[in-house]
Length: 335
Image: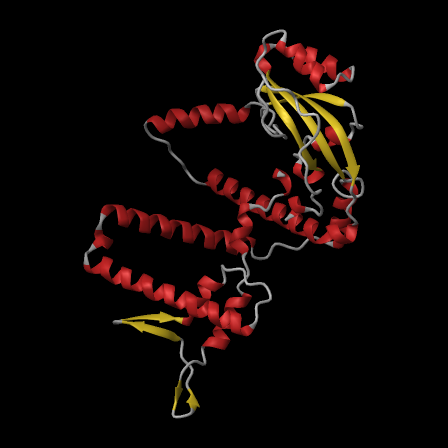
């Protein structure tokens, strides 16, 4: 579900606690006549050195969970071997003067820009306040369709291009509670091409802007929903109540609120920087930027939130029931 999925910006905030612990554990490698000699060098490859810090950087991006000390040590050794292989290739590339190749220079500069930008955003969002218990509780109470009244839906749908002009007809058919087979027959007799299908969807798998509309439907009821360039006849074939308690939902809500707050901070900062910096578009990009600015001043078009189900061609018979399978539990969309 788009609004509850993990935000890309959170990848900038991965923990380095493991890296720190490994630095302590691995820095005491090597011995000299029975005494331990601390070193930050894990290996020497020709005239180059590979440090424990380099190993830690790789491991900090590797989820290890509650791995044992032996497992962490084994992972560290594997990382070191890969770094050795990498260094051997780097030495050969340098000897062949590949680092002076225009394409390589461009890629190195692109990597440098990405690292610097990420570092700035990490610094910017490093002290984002955690959601308070009150904020978490409020979000839980404000979204019963996701939690206390959460349902698993067996959905059927038929999608028609909005330009064809059957929007009002589909709305009437939905209000009359017509079965999906009758709607499909109505369109076929008018030679209307359509797509659709059926599927089981948990509440968090439905876009937030559409969820209230779907949640309001009882089993057997339908609605005609416009999204982007299409109109969808959506029917709730059946549903099942699978509530999520506040205790279970709390960790996921906290993560979602933190992700959203982080995204707002980054978006606000980029907007501020754009407003305070002179940006001049040149050539063809000037015209493209002007068109983009005009579009930004217009009301945003409805987001393309559908389809929610598996494909079904217009010549096929609508499925009588949703896909079989275990009901997806939990609050996956908040992770």
